[in-house]
Length: 141
Image 1: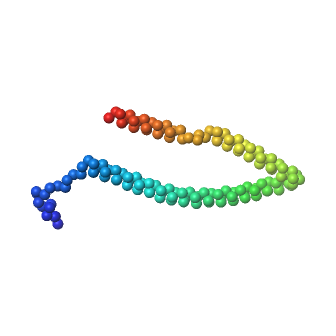
Image 2: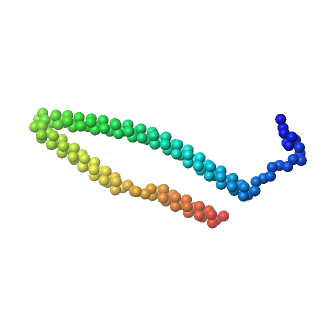
Image 3: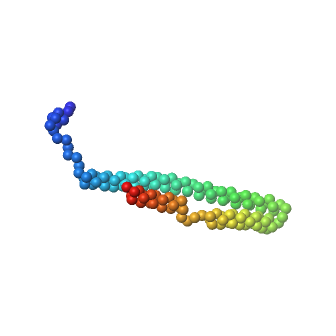
């Protein structure tokens, strides 16, 4: 059913809000939108962090089991070499080989760390460019 006010052709339309009211509405709606987006981001981050924590724990457990497996392989290598050499000599040979592998891995990791940059250079450059473009757009009106 249509209301009586709709049927009356002389009824006045609702007054349009003033510019100040519109700005107030814009400000409050923008604030609410930002708060809502922040809450959503917090919830998403919490869920993501939960999954990351579980994954990290399982990955750590897998690493620990792998270390035990590696220890068993090292013991087997020593036992195999001890068939031809005294046990102490077999253990020394295996230890020297392991230290050599550790040294090579250390040198490779040092080289990789030297190439790492503490600042995200591309992101900083993009943000500076965005700021420059916004400033140019503001003055070019």
